[in-house]
Length: 442
Image (tube, rainbow, N blue to C red; front, side, top):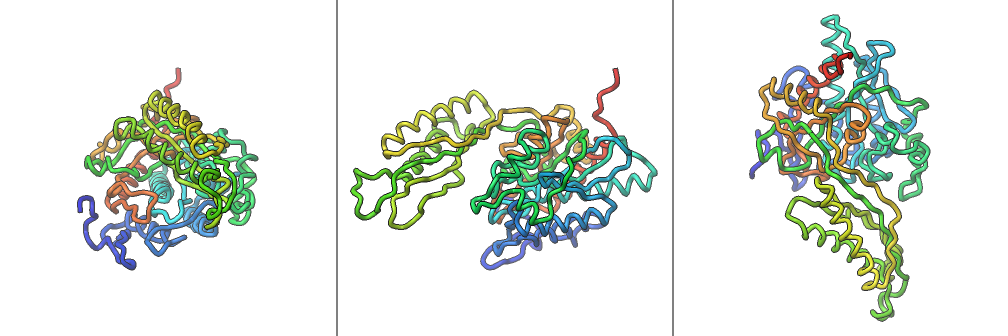
């Protein structure tokens, strides 16, 4: 089918499923080492279906962090953790100078793909290794120091909100609030960090610039034959936590007219979110409910409480606001129909904000220098770069995703594309470390 990787040797059978694996034998030198390291990284939290499960602060997350520490220290980098568990591999060549930060995240969703986040961290490390060797061989000293970063809890699967580590780093989320956050089992972030030896006592390095590379998690680049996407802005998003309150009763003996079914109310809210999306032209608004927690979740009990996480996303803030109003207008209708009460207990919203134009243009120039097709793209998903761009100039790069599959064990990007992305990221970081985007003195 269209988008199937080639050659066929890139595929191995696992049960009845076809799962893509990197093939270092078709590459040479540093590229082959990078692909071999990616293969090793994929073993941490590996799932039978060919994906990974390594939620933030889990044993698998701790194991991969320890492995990354070894990889970085073997190349002469000093590894430090900050107070929220962000992991930094530091190369200080200019004492006292700020750092160019480059990285992404290693934590994953449950039964997730292997590329989301992890590719960006490993590409950052190998870009940094190549530049460190280049500078040593030439006897050069860059203008800025260099740091590889693995952000804590970007996914938000275990601890909410998502992008926690970069939110604390950028001052958007208080450290103590983050450390006190508990997972569904009552384990706090501070305890998970202690269990994985991931909590430091200092702040992270002072940033001058930030760069990140990520898989697109969509079909657009593959469809258009684009190798590198220069991200120019993010979509706006409104994310809510709702609690639907009903009354617990017997599913067999309680007559229908007397029921106050929280699960019915939650189901109507799920449908309402989709109906709102269908009111607008296809593709301009995304809505979803990704998580439902039902209490008491017993086969013979009408649910008394359901917690759900609902989000709306669009590149058009006015359209998003209209959709948001339409959704909220349905809350009273649902309450009356299901005889329940709906409570909004949390929200996490952000608007459309651009990445710095000079960073976008730098990415385009360096990609063109390598003869690769590029295009300006928007990110529909949140990334740590969407936090970082609010405090320092930031360059965000995408590589294609085969069939647009993401947050799924079949997530895949070809070896050729992740290697091309590594090369462009290396060029970007080299330029940032040299101060190519510095404003001239006035």
